[in-house]
Image 1 (cartoon, rainbow, N blue to C red):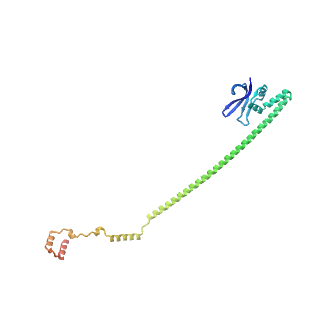
Image 2: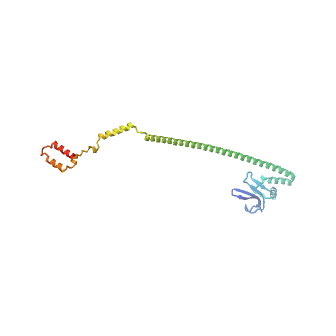
Image 3: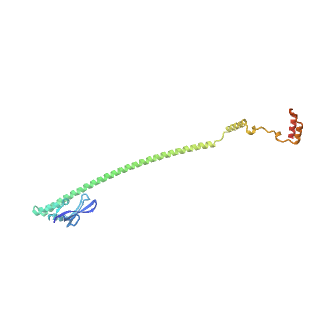
Length: 257
């Protein structure tokens, strides 16, 4: 049976985490496994690896082959280094204590490099954060300046509109005062007398229809009595002779009486 150290996927879409397991090569990727050696989380920087080094070394010494990805992970955690040292102890190149000291020194240098990388990443993150804050502060200042300029322009426009309205109101009040003055102004007596005289002259020059009508003779208007008619008929001159003034005068006198 072919046994391998490989990754078994877990986690949600886009954020996977993996278990490092010992499983049959013919089994499905996420199927049954023989042993679990640790976990691998690539979502952090640097990646988070939790691994049982001694158990993994024992499985490798027993002939279990890791996949390429798992080999890189095991090398990162020092599994392959420790297997090499154990092989040296078995061959008698050095003692177990020397192997432990060498592995401890390598592990310490590895941890220092990891911490240096974390510090570098943290400093870079702080620099990016500061740069982002500075950029946001600059943008906020520009927005504030633009808002102040806009408010100033709006205030100037409102002030101009208010001045124009005040000017129009002043002009209207002035025109109203002028109209009131012209209405309430006293009439000049000289002008009024001249106008009255002109009116009288016009009335004398152009007689009214009543004045121009011919006067009705009161004598013809009033019918004569029988006595007057008799007298007039007795004293009426013959045809062709004009009436005398005495008759006319007598008739007029009697009518007046």
